[in-house]
Image (cartoon, rainbow, N blue to C red; front, side, top):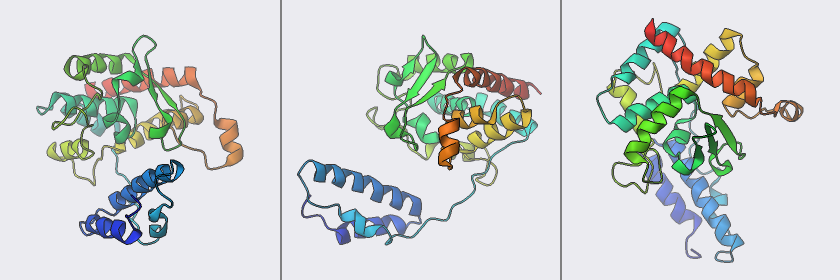
Length: 256
């Protein structure tokens, strides 16, 4: 590792940039940096060469993630997901994505050890969360039913949604978006990440729920330090009711 230099890493990242994958290049730099920082702490390396690359990469343009927020259209999408004829695991992945309103990376990296079926709770560990704090997700009956279906398929492995190539790795980050494209939804209509916006918009518009509970369900970090300290309460009981309501809401719009 001591022979790896910043120019060597940059040369590799430039190959990723050349394909237009600017966000991926930034994530790779961050991942490589975390490895080097661990190496420095362990006495294996003396410096983190990625520090010099902070301003060397092309900054990705932030694109608003599109989402379906009209109830009738959302119901149509959920019906199409229910009858999806591809991989069963992919269909369940999309269904859980919609019901739980988690980030696509949370779903595809989920491990069986994180789920407590008795308590109906999914515990996402801090290292996987943007806020770097453990995040608890209440599991409504609809989600538990899907998880039981998945357990019969992949329950012997580590990941709920393993890669088709190896059960030692999670499903590809492109799988869920690619499936939406196959179903006829363009990137301007709906994305895998867009289910979170669907949940946020419709839950807020219902005026049934405390906005703080919705934000905690989404694991959003409050920008204001004062507000963050005030609003950090779990709102757990309300979030459990909110999760049940949202799962039922999706069933309701599917029936329209």
